[in-house]
Length: 188
Image (cartoon, rainbow, N blue to C red; front, side, top):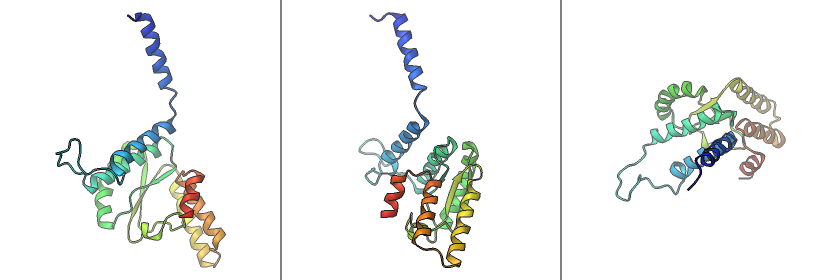
């Protein structure tokens, strides 16, 4: 039988070690759980149990996606995040729903109908679609300055390979992607 004093000591030590878990680890676990349970292409559409008729509608999925990224931006693990790119009519629905949640997460959102095209993502990812930028502070101004810089480079004919790579890297860093992920996206 375990001594009650020793048991209290062990429980206090466990609680103390739990306080040392880094926010990055917590965010990673949240994101991994989300991917494994919902976003994975291998995820089943049915819920628990073999005979379940439960399915996740696209709006609920998009709201869950937004909430995950809003939390990660709120706790400072990402400077900026993006919602799914959706056709304008679908984005109208999503935007109505997530405006309330943005305030709960202490983040701001900006609907972007003309997302900055760089070599980081294919043009088709956002062409004809809107994206919600999830951010805090002056990040939106930084993003808009980046868009203006690209327009200047294109206008004066200096949007060459070097400028393209620099702009893509800047966007990747604004999205808080690690260098290896930026390299991977640029190589694809």
